[in-house]
Image 1: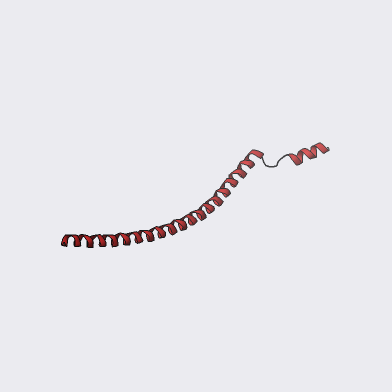
Image 2: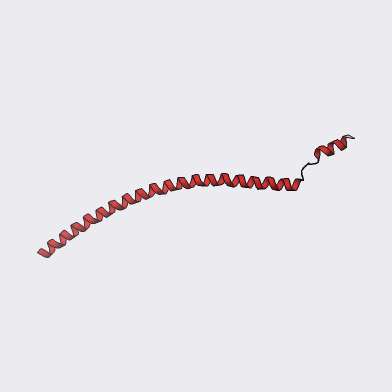
Length: 86
């Protein structure tokens, strides 16, 4: 056995290269997809919290504006009644 024969045996893959690469790529994609899904779930949770905070802020602002409108309508009605009474 020559040195070239030993080198050829060491360099020759025991498993066919193309199927092994395909399996590796499929596993890589699946693992990456699972990790991406976890991160997207974290992002979704963060967005949900942000939307919830914004919703609460807008609901509070809406309530304030409704109160101001109600008071303004009350003043308007009072003035209208005074004007009719004259």
